[in-house]
Length: 151
Image 1 (tube, rainbow, N blue to C red):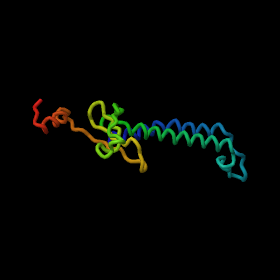
Image 2 (image 1 turned 135 degrees about the vertical axis):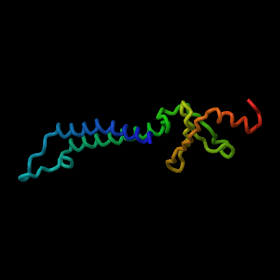
Image 3 (image 1 turned 45 degrees about the horizontal axis):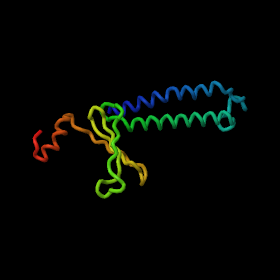
Image 4 (image 1 turned 120 degrees about the vertical axis):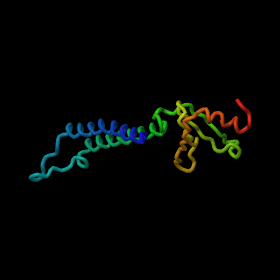
C-alpha cells in the first residue's frame, strides 16, 4: 500500500506544476474574439502557435509520467529505496544450462530482489519481485543446512 501511495504522491507532485503551466498558457494567449453574442470558439484547433504549445505541454506530461513509472519500477516494495547492485545472471551461450540472461537488483536493506530479463524478445514482460523474509540469517544459513555443514 505504501508503494502505491508513494507513486500517487509522485504523480500528484508532477501534475501540479504541469497544470500550472497549462493555466499559464491560457493566460498568455489572448482569447479569440466573440463570434456571436456569447460564443467564443476554442483556440486549440484554430490557432497554430497555441496548438503547438499545447502539443509540447502534452509531450512534457507524457515524459513526466514515463519517468515516474520508470523510477517506481526500480524501488523497493517495502522501504521505497532505490534498488542497487545490478548482477547479471545467465548466459546466451549457455542458455540451456543457466537460462536466459537476467539482471537482478537487490534492496540495500535486504527486503527483496527484482529480477528482470536482460532482453525482452516477446514484448514487455513484468519483472519478478521476490520478497525476502525478515530473518536474513535464516536465509543465509539455509544453504549450509541443506548440505549438512554446520557453520
